[in-house]
Length: 194
Image 1 (cartoon, rainbow, N blue to C red):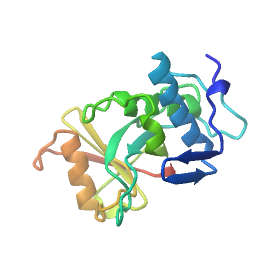
Image 2 (cartoon, helix red, strand yellow):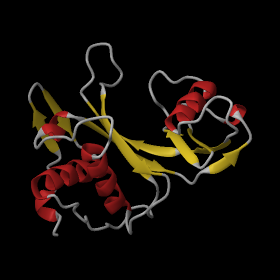
Image 3 (cartoon, helix red, strand yellow):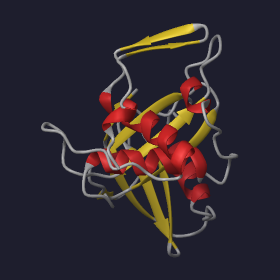
Image 4 (cartoon, helix red, strand yellow):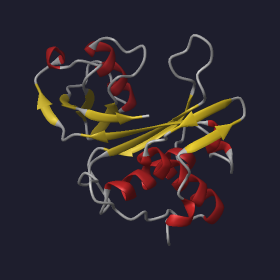
């Protein structure tokens, strides 16, 4: 599928707000969701010079932030720890579509709904094993918790998550692990693109 007809302009106007100079990776995510909702196909955007190599990618979708909020309510967030696709743009497209229609916590997006959501793309660095919470900084690192064949991940720089213990507890619950289950920890950095 040719991706070019679905690229988005750099100036987007929404009811009640104007967004300027949208990052190209955010445009890839929005466009992939729109294309998928219209065609039921995940587009394959071509890689461009200057793109980083494929990496783990997460895409989160939020309602617009209300007064006094850092970010609005979560509407979907899915990705992969390690790359599964041949390019970072394809990885973003796949994760964006999954966040829009496959996050079991939320109903699938409807056509046009993505235009009213805030999109964040996380380009993950390689996970590195750590010994304990003293090697985490929730503002800087995400955490991966593994145990009993299950894995839970929490992205870095999540509003309201200020301690490593909070991070680990949330990732542990995401993996379905009890506080008594033995776990292995890894951390990762991420380029966060709004």
